[in-house]
Image: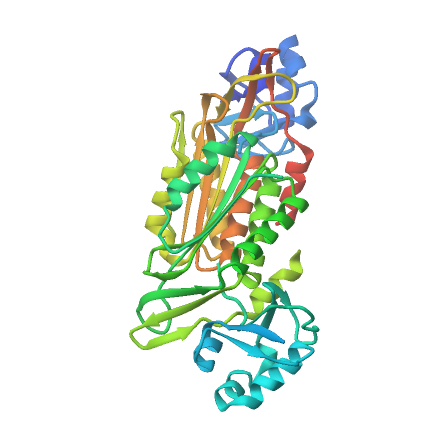
Length: 83
Length: 83
Length: 150
Length: 150
């Protein structure tokens, strides 16, 4: 299934792009991360410490064990620092 | 000893004046209140519930058991309602 | 000593302008919190005006002491307190406080503390004049109780 | 629903002007609290500028949800949140919140809550550009811990 993957802040810099569309069979966020990590070193580096990352599914904060279901847009980013 | 007595808010309205100078031998705030109360009905009315009143000695909040000592200015008023 | 700007005045002040000036002068430390109390309508009738009596001399003294306590307890770099007395109409600003700190928690706590103490320890008394007559505002038990938080 | 005014924008805003407008429009309820976060110097070198990245779409959504939670929990009559993104210099306002309530405790608590949640749950990321280079600001454990207060 085709899904949009977004990256923000230093994760975006490490992956080297802000968004991409990929065709994936991953059933959960964790499976998607494993799939990305296996692709290229820059993904492996970016996702080397998943515990320090956050994920949003269709713009709602979620977690790595969540099923992707019909999610269109998956965003990965470091802990937020607004305010 | 001559001392300035000040009244504020509804206490001022009941006593009927904002300040007066009196010559008193009262040793404590409580004794001064007793002396004032004995003077006239309007004082007795104003001080009928001393527990609901506050006192300041030379512009510092104090209490009714405090000695008057060399205090020049004694102010009586209801609980404050600023802000 | 941090800059304390304490003003007790009869004339109106412009809350927005004071916020802007405070942030301009002290905001580089990071966090600014302001509070503004505004004359509102009462439950017991349409408010025509509010009148605030105060104790000249003691008022400035009490506000300075309260601000100094806040500055000793939290890391604040500046503090402004403005409080009006005399008559004022609905919608007019009665008073404001502003605090600036490198830490948002300190700016919030100090402003909250200032308000609690100012409310019960600074010599101001409010009178509300409605179409039903004039009434002195009564102190609330909850205001006195709020001091126990600190 | 209470009036929520939520703005995510690159262009600067005038904190004082926004405070004045907010108090003018909503102040008659009695108590107004505002917070402003301002770009400050860092410990690691003179700050040239700050750059804030955000997640368009999710940002507005997250801020609206946070404001709605605050409005459900406290008696607030209006709430404004303004947050900038993009580049900004030292001394410029990054963001502000404002709350209005008949009760000062509610106005304070709601503004404090908004700041805690906004800090850790709204998708903004700060980068500081100093003469030593560019650094992403790290989230503080104390910011995440602050959420447990609520």
